[in-house]
Image (cartoon, rainbow, N blue to C red; front, side, top):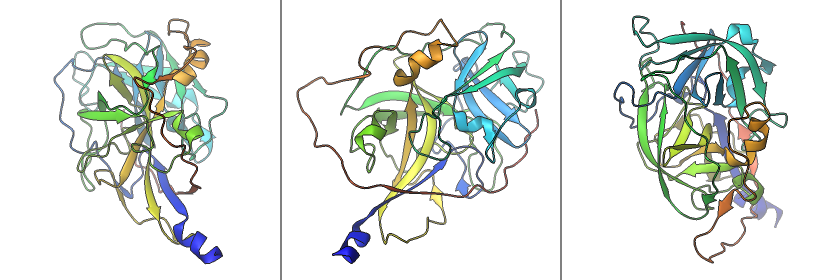
Amino acid sequence: MLLFFFALTLIIHQTELKNIHHLQRRLAGGLVPCAGEFPYLAISLHEQLHCTTAIITEQWLLGAAHCYIIRGKRIDPKEMFIVAGILDYQDKSCKWRQVRQALEIHLHPKFKEKQISKNDIGLVKVEPFEFNLAVQSIPLSGKPFPIDEEVRCTAAGWGDTDRMSFNSVLRKLDVIAAQSPKACPGLQINQRRRVICLVQDEGKGLCDGDSGGPLVCDGEMVGVAHQVYLETYKNFFAPPPDSMDCGAREIVHTYMFTCPFLDWIKSYVPEVPPQPPHCFYRRNSYHPTPDYRRINSFLLPFLNQSSVNH
């Protein structure tokens, strides 16, 4: 009986989306957007990593907490630069380009590094951006998200495009987002209530460098690019897979759902909407069976992170 349990134990292999070399680094299947199509996007640059982030006011950006930690230590704000108004962050000749040094970095107090759905939300304060056609803010949604329903949304980020090539150009991807046991396989109810997952679509998905980027549905930000994981049924002692191709159908892409964090965000950014009494709603009376399967998380080790120029 014990051996049978080990054989059927659910294993979730997961990783964050910043510069991790053993991943195929890309916004898989993404397209280069038109200039000015995503004026609310910016990139956080540090000498050891880069992440996508979203402008939510002239002075505040919302992204993933894990983008501001390196080997367990918080990044000094003076070492982080935010670049907005660009498609290619290496193109310093762009007339719309605006660069700001971080003034403050705030991570959610209950953030747990390298754990799925554990409050992976962070705020960065900068000197005010000058809003124009190329630099604008994105409104945060203050509305509940439908349960067990597929929603058309848009993802974008500065992830690399393949295993061997460096990419500095913004990419976009039309996606289907959902909050359900089917879209987020293997996650328990208490984990799912803080995330939104992308419906798996082979050849398309997020990966490192896209971390922190917004999930935008109906013109409002509802999520922050969080982690990818692989659900498998294997021997309990099986090691993590050697590769997690972000375009593979088996990979699950997750976003931190912003609604449960609105009160915390609002404590720093008064302009954001208040947190509603309920962050999810149903359009019908169907109630899925709770998913109580046991989860074991094996986090992939971080390798040396590449340097980027700002």
